[in-house]
Each structure stands twice: as structure tokens, then as C-alpha cells.
Length: 294
Image 1 (cartoon, one colour):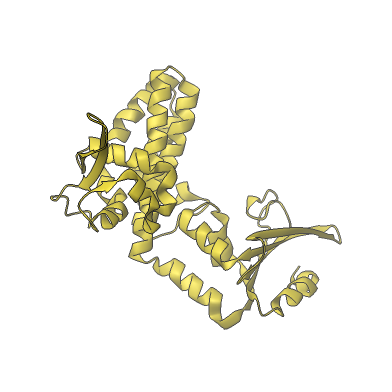
Image 2 (cartoon, rainbow, N blue to C red; image 1 turned 45 degrees about the horizontal axis):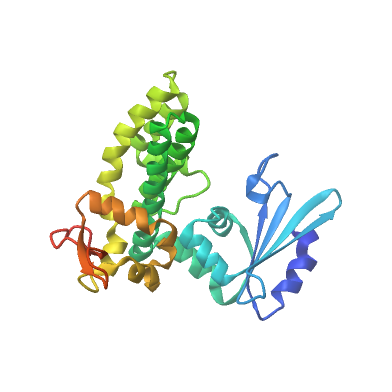
């Protein structure tokens, strides 16, 4: 396969804009890792008009995809977890070209997983966990059990990812295989939800009880990144937090995260006067005694 693709990747490797070329080959008959192509070429470039450009090829009854991705897009995927295959591609793909040890350094960073990055990723996952959990409870209380089930499965997935990240690993496409070894309690919750012979309503009811405790137990590590930002001053308005550079990726879930942390006593709310009588802005501050999240 490499010989067949050589003219394609050598042309890309000759460009000074190209940082690395990696080849990923199909592992199974049904291979989501390559979108069922026999091979995928990942070409990482410094800059491009589009962050992602894909071409499909066919030759001698075989297929391949060419994925040209900017370094900025790769970093975003790694940070936000929006393309989990990228971790697999980088760690397990065959490196065909590596300018100035770009891939060597990237793999080293993935393996060491700096604490600041872990804290940020856990915060993002925690916000998503809370949103899905709240959605699930609302569906459950409205007797919409299938929608509640869907939301809870997603909530458990975010909880699983938090467990993996907290132990210094990047969640991969096989996250439940990782969690089964690292945190059997969370894996057991997931198994009971999908395999139990109890009625769906009963399964959800029991899971919400267990999740209440687990979500609260993760509040300190889940709010650590937010706490670090909010230490910069005593009181914040919501709009100020939204505009903060270090919280730009939290935008979709920042509101529910603040509300949950307020409900659980991690954050205090104060009233800030407006021009109108009896109408106040809400100001947010972390309680001074919450030292363990630092």
C-alpha cells in the first residue's frame, strides 16, 4: 500500500508547508478508523485555506483517503476531543515523513499529557457531563424514557472520559475498554444501564441516584480550570467569563456549569446594581474555602 501511495505523499512531503505525513491502514473488514478505506493518509501542514481538505482515491481495487489538516486543527481536535481518531492516527499510524521531529514531539506531548491540559480537558468534559445529566433528568421527569436513556448514555461517556483524563491518558475511540481497567465502578454503571433486565424506567431511576453522587464527587477536579481563571478577581459577571480567552471553549456549557457549582455551594452569587431598581446583575465568585480545586 505504501508503494502505491508513494507518489501522492512524496509530492506533499516536498512542500515546505508540510510538517508530517502519516499512513493508517485498515485493521478490520469494517474499519471506522479509516472510514472503511484500505488506507488513510494524514498530511499535517502549517497553514492552509481550509483547516481540513479530503480527497478519495481508488487504484487496483483498493481505496485510500488523503486528509490534509492544519496544525491548528490537529491541536483543536486533541484539546476538544472532537475527532477521537486523531489520537489513534498519531500514536499508531506509520510515520512516512516528519519535518524537524514534529510528530516525535507531538507524541511525546500526548504521552506526558501536561497537567494544565488535563485540567482544561476535564473542565470541558465536566460541563458536557452536567448538561447531559440535566437533560436526562428533565426527560425522565417528563416520562420520556428513551430520550432520557440517550442523554444518560452520553453523560456516562463524558464521565468515563473524565476518569481516563484524570489518570493522565487521552480518551481513545475505545474509551470503555480503557475505563473497564481504570475505574470499574463507572464501567459497571454503564453495563447495568445497557444490559440490565429491569424496566428502562427502573434502570434510569437507579442510575440517577448513583450519578448524583459521582458527578458531585468530580466537582473539584471538574471546576479546577474555571477556578484558576476566576481567581484573577473577586467577582465576575457571566459576560466577562464568556469573553475570557481561557474559557473560550467552555461557551456552550458555561451557564449550566456555573449553575451546578452554585447549587452545590462551590460558587457564591452576589447582586450587582443596575440602572433599574429591583433588577440586579448576577456576580459570581468562588468561595474562599474551596482550596482543594487549585
